[in-house]
Image (cartoon, rainbow, N blue to C red; front, side, top):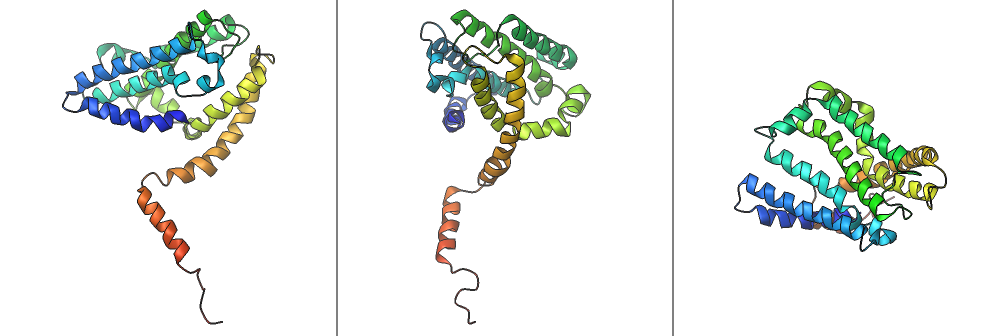
Length: 254
């Protein structure tokens, strides 16, 4: 939640940075800023500060800034190169989605079996080296997952067919609630020491998080999103008018 509170301020800051600059100059500055923010998040969570041991850190935007920085960096690059196409290396990787996704799956399986008892980057029982290794390795897997989707042809090929599936598109709708609820249940089932094992944490998280994420989207997120295109002044004015106007039928003779 704190990330979405901070996002407008970050957007305002980058707008100031971009003013009067050509797109590539702006991209270099913003990527440098994101790299610094991501590195700061890892350093604060790992040695020598070890703030990941505190709930306020691991559940805040600061504790996940490394991941947000990766996503924002991909978005920045895609915006700059959307007309002329991405650089040759990204274009070659996007043209081979099966290789990118196989690499991401291999990294994920590596973390599942190599980092026993469970590959949780927010787990309090992992040491500093494991914390940094998991972040960097899983971050690389996330980038490999998104390269074909972001830099490939959106209308043709495997990414378009796979990501355009109705089930995956629906999961994308509820993904924010899924992130929040799954993290909560994974922590409850697995910590301390991943007591229930990886399989139980995964299955329990899915069975519990998906229904709640669905309810969160349809009864909280979607109604709130209807307000995003209306100025706050207009919303408040409409509410005030409804309070002042008599109810339908009030004052009419019986």
